[in-house]
Each structure stands twice: as C-alpha cells, then as structure tokens.
Amino acid sequence: MKIFVRERARADEGTKRPRYRVVGVQGEGLTIKVKRIRKCELNQIAEHTGAEIVYLERDGKGSEGKKD
Image (cartoon, rainbow, N blue to C red; front, side):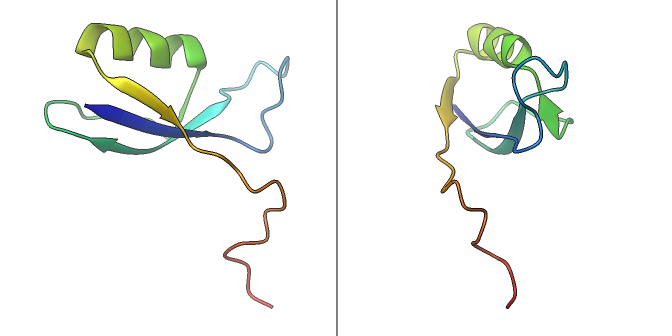
C-alpha cells in the first residue's frame, strides 16, 4: 500500500498548520477522510498499516494548471 502526499504551499514550518495534503492512496483497506494531515499523523498511519509514504515533488513555480 502507498500513500501519496505533497507539501502544502501555505503551510510553512512553524505555522502550526497541517503541512501535507493527501493526493491519493494505492491499495485496499484504507480510507483517509482528511484533506490535510500532519507528518506525525501520517507516520503513525503508515506504521500501523504497513504503508509506504511517497512524497511528491513540487515544481516550485505553481504554474501548472493555471489558465492564461
């Protein structure tokens, strides 16, 4: 099982806001009902389910998907 997450743009370190957003889950037996999650919570879920956490890279520009 894999959990795909990416870092949120507005959640910098020290802001006390959830820093990661769940993008998708591969495999069966796990339903995540939150949009944003803290790294410690994510690690606990992965530990208990045996899932691998995949951190997706951001392009740093935020330009993809925007309409001109």
